[in-house]
Image (cartoon, rainbow over all chains, first blue to last red; front, side):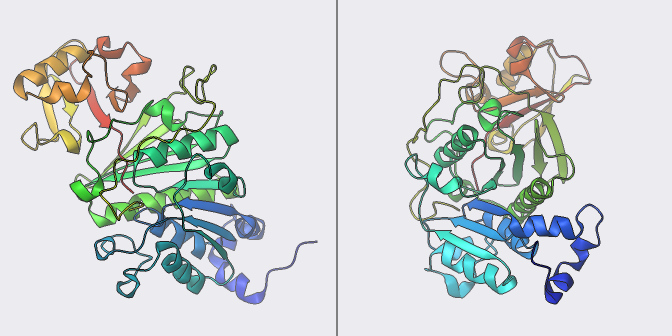
Length: 273
Length: 91
């Protein structure tokens, strides 16, 4: 027998419970859901904020960075007084203040091939909101090898990209882009800039995908890449077939162990921007 | 009429900040050669030193990834929309 909702939970989640697609049973799924967010920055902030508001019961936060003044234009979980504090601590405080129902687990750490499998195994869905290619490929490969669904989101200047990966059922990030670019070829956010609100659009879309997966409703963004152009306010999707020769999720995978690509994007400081 | 090619933000400095250019050609390879003539430097951002399409930049004809069609030999016709989409890592 499940514990019944408390009165204030019924009020807090009433606008969810009213939805036939969610209802009390769906809200319970959210409260029992465990989501890991890699990065508590531009994407991780809005994503975690909405997941906390929605009552996703366990949120894990991974980030080894501290809050910098230049983060505040987009990383909405961090306030001016948080400059210099670890991002995961600053984020936890805001999320717990928003919703005391949830449990926030912090990992003030950078994921590596040694650590990531042990962390992700405790969660149902992973959100990649990291800011560099080595971490993105590490998250992809770890999720594929352990069969964890995850949401990919990326932002750059006025552009965003989004895709949901259900390992083996649909294409993975390597099916889309087989290999990371070599160091130096693609500028990072620190070098190129980012319109802050683009992080909100994509991070909130990631939260939407996570909620749909936890609830088991709708059609996830699997096999399709969503491309967002803020300047033209245009959303397009292109098809992403599963690559049968994919190095990690194909029929004859060559990647069976995790790879630590050389970290080249961080210019110091802002590692999970 | 020609083929509309959408240029991603990181490459727009090569096209004089144009997000869309109209180009002629019967294959994706033709289009890129044509673009290189007008906007030198574009080709090397799409092809590697060995002349192969880079693995972190995708080209779509309408909604289809040319790696799953006939690569840069994929044919294009007037009215098609071709998009160049690089991987982006920011977060």
